[in-house]
Length: 127
Image 1 (tube, helix red, strand yellow):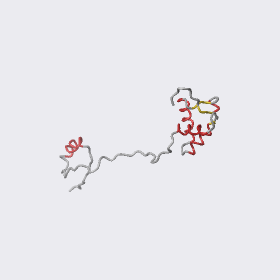
Image 2: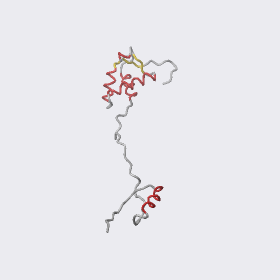
Image 3: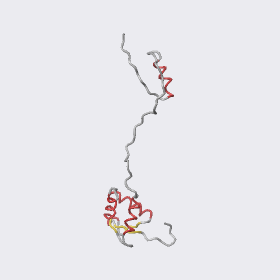
Image 4: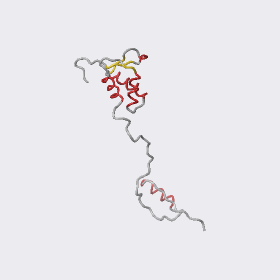
């Protein structure tokens, strides 16, 4: 006599009928029971904690507001502030560029100088 095997297969409800038809002549159907849990899905690895409470834009504005009004600050000052806030130092550049685009920060000098200051607001401008 040949050796017998018990086979357990988990299939979606819509594919149950074709699977049962395929094995109908090959063996004895012992039983069909619904699965106790849903299908097993692969989880995505993501950081469990948030980096900090401040966004990059908020860190930039905080540094500029703490400085004296009209002070011109170098990019390295912002990089240091990002590091202290638990963020990557390299995140300072994109955050500064975003603030320049929104008009809250302006460049003092050329791009190569990497100097920034708080933009002066015009009367009637929205915050």
